[in-house]
Image (tube, rainbow, N blue to C red):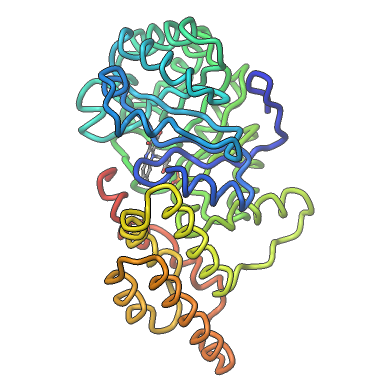
Length: 354
Ligand SMILES: Cc1cc2nc3c(=O)[nH]c(=O)nc-3n(C[C@H](O)[C@H](O)[C@H](O)COP(=O)(O)O)c2cc1C
């Protein structure tokens, strides 16, 4: 798949996720094999006003490359100005969000709301493409609702406006995150596209990833919720794509190790206190399905020092060794089956998007 000077065969990409794909999580996914990572979406208006918290979202480290910055907004003026600011942070490319269904974005005429105004969507895109010297891509959904699926028209307009790739989540705005993503519509878009399409929606395992490539014919795929608490999905998918063999499944040691790595990165970028507090919402995803997990979770969410948290996790790893010897630890597959909507709906950040 080519975007500007990037050329990656069948890239497996970390999806942009607000409150999730910060520097720590991006770097974790990168270590575990993500080919490209995206920032959380960044408000064009806030960037333009110089809101510090927003501007900080543009900071990335060289190890994260290739990285895309994603911006959202509803006017040509704010989006072109934000695009130039984002470009000054030197991402590999710039992505425009035309898919966010939430009230705080779509309710203000940005994100998925622009699916109802394809001309304005094209005008914004064209202006952003002209405003910067880096490649511009877009991420969107199939349409506003099932009765108004307009992705083929939108694709053509965005191609004409100069985007270099389109990430497509196989749901409409009205569907939010309900049901299953419609991979048939993604395949249809791929058939009509003259630019790379990145397929997105409901990849929960390396097998799903391979199936998505095969089913849609997309040049790249993008994984969101399936990577939360499960960065192994990237290395596993790479292994499957390369060898045709299923990857070995991460066990409790790998999962606890990933939680520790995540904690370390979180503290590195957010400081001891905030970095540790921020991690609280992640433990249940890393430890899901392990024996007596609620006891350890309760301990973890009371701690404020990273050393204490790390020591609880290491003790728990020892405890799990004991459970393993007694045959009380289930197969990873059980965890994976559980790692679906139920788990994700529990995820604090997700609730804002549903
Ligand atoms: C917590 C959360 C935050 C999200 N934030 C963004 C975002 O900032 N920008 C965006 O384009 N999509 C966002 N999405 C949508 C995802 O990028 C992705 O399109 C969607 O989750 C479907 O893919 P999945 O089934 O692999 O999760 C978010 C999704 C979730 C669950």
